[in-house]
Length: 258
Image 1 (cartoon, helix red, strand yellow):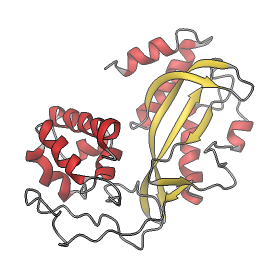
Image 2 (cartoon, rainbow, N blue to C red; image 1 turned 60 degrees about the vertical axis):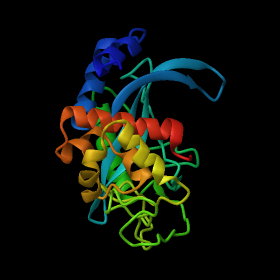
Image 3 (tube, one colour; image 1 turned 180 degrees about the vertical axis):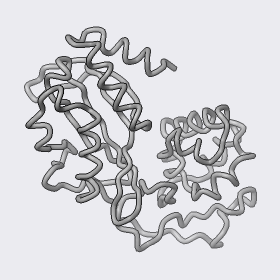
């Protein structure tokens, strides 16, 4: 897997102001460590295509006294920082975009800060800090409504006694906001938790399942939405964190709906 530096170097190789862009992006990533660089083709409304750098990940947002991690994607224009980036909210399969003053039905974010963008007064760090404030006032996503699935036992998953703390009922029915709250369990409706267990065993992580469960990670969706920072907060070492991330990617890519 390419490092962030390698991705930045490759993605910015055709940018007009590569050095300035790199400093601006790196500064934002230093303060918001869950944002990671990547590059891909962006198709504009007029049909034009450009390969652009983008930052993907979550930013912490305080809403009614609790911290939530809101998923975003920030596309960096090839004339950055003299042209504003494009920002999108990227909900997971359990989430739905909440349209409002600043977010449309496609998740595109519109802010005065973007309209008034002027470098060097405007930069990525300032933009993301404002996003955190705006999203705290008006959350851009919410949980999809789904019927609760009751397990046969409140503290066990049917068919396995290996992980006694796991429950199929993974969310408070009164919760109406998004499931990106730090370590908040996510509803497992429609998902096969056996895949969770099998994958953990495959990556030799079944010995740390109880650690995950103690932190509220008792659903496939919760596990897949976790970031490297989340694993680090649990006290897992580098090797364990890396295996957890690979396991989560495996579930998302091959077995989430199995």
